[in-house]
Length: 270
Image (cartoon, rainbow, N blue to C red; front, side, top):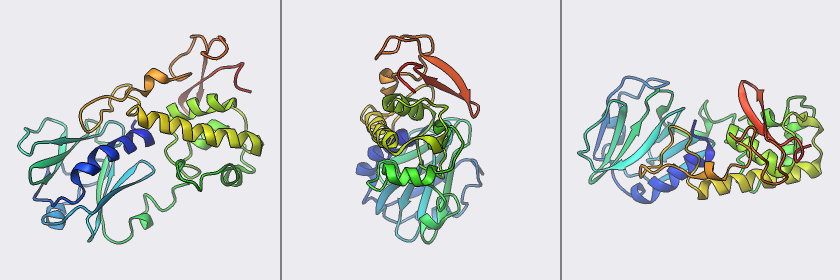
């Protein structure tokens, strides 16, 4: 599933090419993805200029002045920049044409979303209760400590909770906890402020490294230019069960938490 780095890589790829351009045509080839597609999207968008593209958590917000297109890539969605007459494939569900350039949404599993929002997009039900942005200056150890106080859930599950902090998905939670030297099963409320300082730094470093590497491509994710991400080549623990820790040589272990795989070093993480 595309997480924050993959969504940010997508935003950085499409924004320079599309911001300031005007929509000339819209094509919808499916009635719904996770939610029904807005049937009146062409009426809303034709002749409108894209003013900017922002990201909130794993959502992309395309600002057209009179409203906002909210995009979520789901588990297998990708956005591509293509020539307008590029033939559509089986899973190419939405095209937004900007004269000589087209933004195409491909989503084989149809777990993504495309909605039209009028008014403040941050007040929308899908966004208004989201937690802190991990790359923002406001995401600090003190802020995280306030959110985690009294929580008995494991620290890995807590930092994957989008109501606490957004976009720290399964891969990046394992990687950040390794960098911070924190065992993934530690109760969140018992992690000291000093250790949270290390964790916040590790989360920011991990996400920024992943963005620089184009995200992680384990199966479905590709950037808007069709190229895969390469951060999986830098994974220190994720997907490395039984392999030697690159720091101490101990074998990496795998456990299940919240029905997801967690990878960690039993020596480096306490």
